[in-house]
Length: 413
Image 1: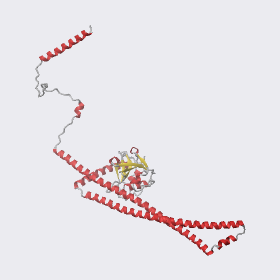
Image 2: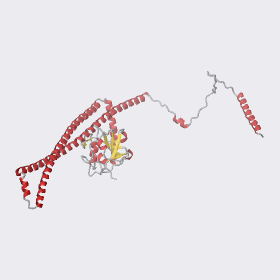
Image 3: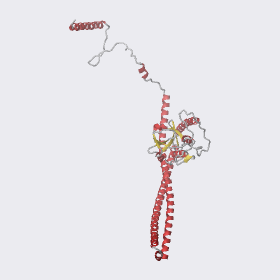
Image 4: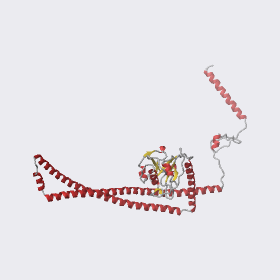
């Protein structure tokens, strides 16, 4: 069979099939179409539409409408209103506390500078006294030489030369006289140097004293600023509505309950948070002061501010730190977040104005703010993390200092 014959046969079969299909459609029940307003008519099938099978995954994704009564809606709206009110008030308090923390740390910085300046004043006063004493001694020595020359005159020197027994003795006597002259010249020169040193030391003392006075004035200004901030915070709380204060109390009670449970677990050695306290570590030391009230400028168990707590804890571990968080941030080894270890010191703010001690498992202990106390908090709750430092601390010897009540015994490894 040729290719042309095959093509004709195939076309004939397809035409026959098409003709048969047309006949079957013509003998079926008629279907009427509703003309559309468009120029092109569309055909709509008669009868109910065939059910559409939806994949199970699509069915699960369909939203389910749940009837909510008016009482539930009112409750949700009231809850949202109360939460919004609490959030706004807490944000205002946080902003005020931040300003107070910055002022407190600036006060601590001024105290550090004042203490350093007072040390310079003490050193300058000591140096001035020594320089004045040396000047008097040199002045007395030169005066004695001048008196001796005035009394004996130049004849004593001539007589000394004439009494030479030999040429070598004469040379020796001349050298001796020359040495005396050089000594007198050196005494005079030293006397001038001592006088200049006294004048320079006195000037340095005066400058240090003036700087100390300026720092004391700055301290008083910082104190006034801090007291005003504290007063503003107290007035803000006093003027708050009873409903808002109730919400604050509820929030504080909830957080306190959570922290008490966490502390109980930590001290019991079975913390579900994964915190393990090493005996003799800075964390164990810091926990001894949990609950001590915040006190701006405080660095003893009578009250702590943030940098005062870190200073007091690490002093018991052989690390001497300044009472200023920004200066503490400049010391030690820098630690990236992924390498944080218990005992590392974490800092907050830009520039730095707050500090705490990392405990592990996303928790740190710190002295937060006025009206609060030394407590534990999640590191991830802070949005102002600035970095961390690791100090070369040594295990504490003996019990934590300044603790007046027995501390819970921590389980050994």
